[in-house]
Amino acid sequence: MILPGASSGRIRWSSIGLLSVLLALAMPLQAAKPTKPWRALEARKASISKVEVEIGDVFDLTRPDENIWVGRTANRLHVTTREAVIRRALLFSEGDRVRERRIYETERLLRAMPFVKNARIDPVVQPDGTVVARVQVRDAWTTQVNAGYSQVGGQKSLFLEIDEKNFLGTGKSVAYDYSKDHERSTWGFSYGDPQLFGSRWTLGAHLQYLSDGFVRSFNLERPFFALDTPWSTGVALSQKRTSLYLYDQGVEVFQAPFIQDEVRLAGARAFHQTETRVWRGGLLFKRQDTSYGLITQTGPPGPLAPPTLTDRRLRGPALTLSTQEDAFESFEDLQGMDTPEDYNLAWTAQMELGMYSRSLGSSMTAPFFRIQADKGWSSSSENLTLLTASWDGRKPSTGLEDSHLAVALVQYHKWTSNQILAALAAVDVARRPDPERWYYMGGDQGMRGFPNQLHPGDARWLVSFDYRLLTEQRWWGLVRLGYSAFIDMGSVRRMDGQGWSRVYSDVGVGLRLGNLKSSAGRVILLSIAAPLNREPYQSRWQITVGNTMRF
Image (tube, rainbow, N blue to C red; front, side, top):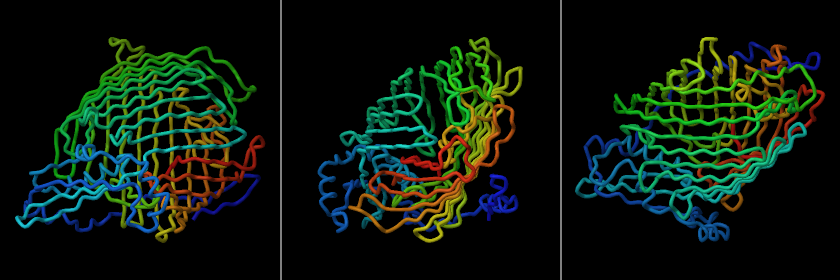
């Protein structure tokens, strides 16, 4: 247990207590898989004679609590997902031998679709021994109006998005967004197609107009949509014309024009596969051009010196390697509400290793790399531990630069069916980071009782604890009420050369309103937090409204 104690206006934490909590979070727990109904059918080599698809409306009118005017009206307004969209996502077809793993992998793929609330595939054994695969899908409410407002350290931000994730039942998404904060006003449009022309290709496009520029992106890809997908390829393009803002003590202190263009071409193939694990290798080519304008001081003089802004041209090929194992388990009410959440409990890893070359037009010759690994552990549906670690950077002749190492550990424990204890421990360390990738400590970075961009730095740590209480109070089958209480602690190694900041800490409470008809059971958070050791220039309370879930 971590025990706070006050001293000279600061918070001191028991190192023994902190160590015990982190060790408990890291303890690996293995989950036992229950027997599943498709296993025996695979063992006797049964075949799928027919695939039936049943798509249910958003509200289940066979349930008295949903057969009300809200449910009936919503069902009439909702456009049901077309059957062809669901069939194209299946990893099996009529005439195939039963493979248990493919059945449950298909369930996860369907649940991951933003227009599907839940999915289940059941076998119906026929007199001749063949099997009918009954695919039952429950549609989600896909017309989302997302709004957020926050007031942190005197900085106000407003966000509004209208998002249709299943346009005319085709699975395509169309969204419009508007936001305004202390930096800029933004409005944008995005389009996504997960089944381009009825294929496995995906298309995404996004256009944002800013009060100080624009952002454009385009992505065309045929991904590894299943464990045994043999190959993948894609292209991603982006353009950014905006301003780079640098902060200290919660206020803007420097500003410079910022231009960045990126191109990424990639392709990979599976070269080794077992029943549950696959290894993939490939090639990619990266191009990134970054340029800065004249930096100007926009805030009062302080200890933070203006950074050196150096234009860069980076071009080079790389080899890629990845591995993935199918060891997914389903949980409920960890992040969302009343919705299955799928987590992989096996090790997965990705790596790319390449070389920027002057012969290809780069402004430097430098190796570059990116490594990421993930793992989950669980002893039951009431416990889950997730580990994520990543490291990326480049190494010209002057030494390692823009290197970022990140490690995060998340723990969920269901105290009772309606009470969840959640904890996050995260550490980020950078070496000679590019200015647009500085770390900050503040409200947007998880310290909910503090202003945004409290201090810039090249290293930070953060620990958060949440107690979440879910009530049985539901309104119209649409919203579920919950509460939360939380505490955050963190520190940053400052860019102004003053070393590590003091350990900041805050406490707060909030409401959690679960959207029971969204695909992810998304939660709207209304929280109020108070700093336990605030800076003289910040307010006593910070209020946040939004639906961004950190863990």
